Image (cartoon, rainbow, N blue to C red):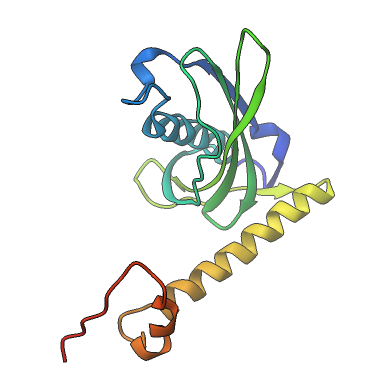
Length: 183
């Protein structure tokens, strides 16, 4: 690792791609899987550029498809390292589309990819930290810490070893479910 810290700007990436009919699903909209594939590619490139190592995707946090993307639209994806741990990074992604004829733009997706740097032997590798220079960068870094802590709590609370059914049955009231517990 050359530097202990890098600026966020050093690894930020933007890609644009025209959406083709071969990218569409049965309803004529761009297939979500194609967008996820592009998102994974830019997250990989951004994290690899920051870390100086190839990276793998450890997790994807919340992918909401906010607006459909049409065939013929230009999709632009922006990636930025929001958080660095010891060997992992959270890469923030924003996906926008633009109708080339009208110039109308839509925000289609925002997501967070946790990427882990790997050395030439496939072992997790330390990554440079990031230099935070704006309030937004500090906000994104802090949000990543809170999101990680909430994720750990959520995972442990629903562990099969400690989960208490009676504590959650009222959540099912009014849901589209029917409980028939085997005693």
